[in-house]
Length: 391
Image 1 (cartoon, helix red, strand yellow):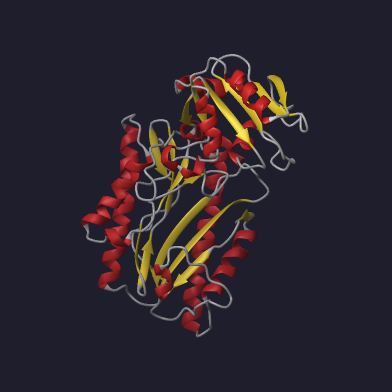
Image 2: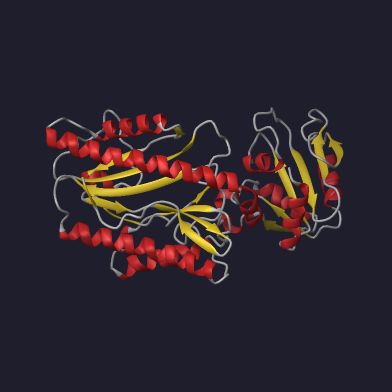
């Protein structure tokens, strides 16, 4: 835990303190930020209060008194619920605005780890409970130079794996060899392992109408054979293996097998591509001008292109997600559909830009790139697909 950084962030956000709370490992965010053992046995509630100024304070159960011993600050113990409430009120002292892993109306559910009852308890002490969402972004999404470097290594290796997969599909189809979606998945997995990369699940290969399911995952039983004339979508993600701090690279490309795309396919792809590029341009412009931009704004830039083209009802997910040591990280998402994400796209963070249009029973197009923001600029970290792949 970096106490100085925590307290600086609290002061920057005009907060009196940050109250961490857990029971039965319900809040993995707290364990990462505080540097606690995520595998330790926790059967009783604990609280850790970091004030904007001064030393932190701990409150632990007498049955489990050592749970926060690795952290700085004075410790109090409790047994009864009455004692817990009295000592928690005293711990918060004169603090007025207190951050917790809470989100008003559950708008940013990714950080809403604290139960409503605990929030009610803290409010009963006269405290103004604020969301820790922006604070979490600072400590969960902002990357080091070393982490950013791991993303670029993964990018170079995974782009090569994807190109090899497109070639295999084309070669096998033209040679009359049977190749199914699951075969492509296994080919990608072999390439990922060979390149010293790791993936937690997937990847996805979706052929024909399966590409219209944005979360389709082929299995050996459900796998569809890929044939001449098919429309194919591949979504693949990986990061460096054996490096817990490594950052993911996550991309989606689409193509057609052994033919030219139809006019309709070209129209839909171009619309998705232009929507992707509109979101990219909005982030680039904001950073070039030294202006803050929230996740919902970047989503709107993309979504408005698709709406104006008349396809808004078929764009059924957010434009992008934060990327960090977790594939779907705890920083700002590009989202004004599933949530109204007011969190800022902070410098030195990574995220996907991946609009899509999906026609059930026909085909679907998604075009996904990753961006990294740097002081004064924002960049796309890999190649951008500009037209459908001719497989």
